[in-house]
Amino acid sequence: MSGRVLITRESAEPLAGMLRERGLVPVHVPLVRLFPTDAPQPVGRPEIVLVTSAVVPRFVPDLAAALGDAAVYAVGSSTAAALGECGITVTAVGTAGGAALLDLVTIDPDHSVWYVGATRPSGDMAQVLAGLDCTLSHWAVYDNAWPARSREDLAHALPVDVVTFTSGSAASRFAQDAELGAAKVAVIGERTAAEVSALGIRVDAVSEVPSMEGLAAVVRRLVDAKVSPGHPVP
Image (cartoon, rainbow, N blue to C red; front, top):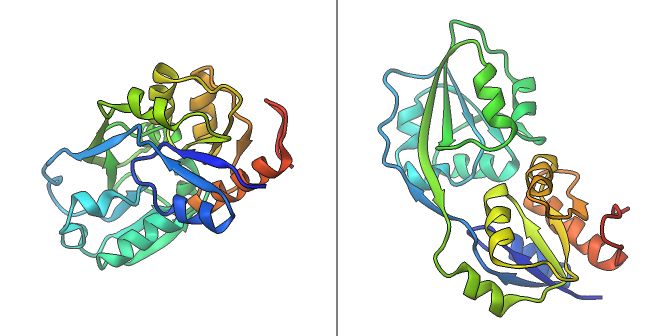
């Protein structure tokens, strides 16, 4: 059984290709637009760097030079791959969100730590940063906004069989501009599931691993299972 799947993140790939490989039809309506802040890098050199998004190198072309020989910890294989492509050696890769990243690294009070990412860290990462006992610099290299034509674009794209969310920001825009109808909802991880549920949007399936591959897999199972709203996908 094939199905139409709405992608709401800024970039259709790599999720769109993964959905096609599974016999699904991706429909892309970006509900989030990322843009650079042009914020200057923090003073000094970091000893430890935390990165939670694969888009970071896109906004800092000379990121490798800025980080020097710091130990770099990334959330997700796509983030690690993007850092590797710009010449950065990743010390360790977390696979369960921002909070779990700290299980991979010991941070002492005398450490100089940089978090490189969004202006507003989402979900558990904001709590993680607030709880760190060290010299922390938040280098906010990008921010997000809502595209102007999302309401019209969604009207043309809907209905679909499954709506996917990889962030609470996209879900917030969807909640304002469209209705689910009979569509099911799949999200990239527990953190996003909590953000989406808080908006009053029913979540039908959550990827076991917070990655594009995990999301594509759970969407395929969701389409195959044809579960009733609110029922978990086996």
